[in-house]
Image (cartoon, rainbow, N blue to C red):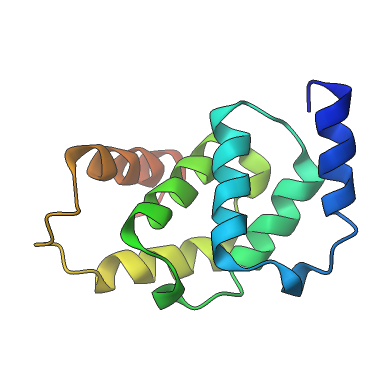
Length: 118
């Protein structure tokens, strides 16, 4: 995970009951780990499993792109149930919304290629 202090903090998160993680902190953690290139395979797997336990409507459009970006960057953050849920969310979003910026579409397309989604 890089710095020893970061590893200590992330290891503490492994002791937290997974069901106590809400959607927003899970998104923020995975996004930060991908953004700052923090490698902690065990925590990535735990968080990805948790993502797959949420309902699609619990994520806003930008959180979907953050999660897909994290899954693309962090191999251990890839979980079939989580990906299925995210694709369901994308299919159900109103694609005419102005919230869909080019950068969001780019992240989604990169994820589709990297994660081999058709």
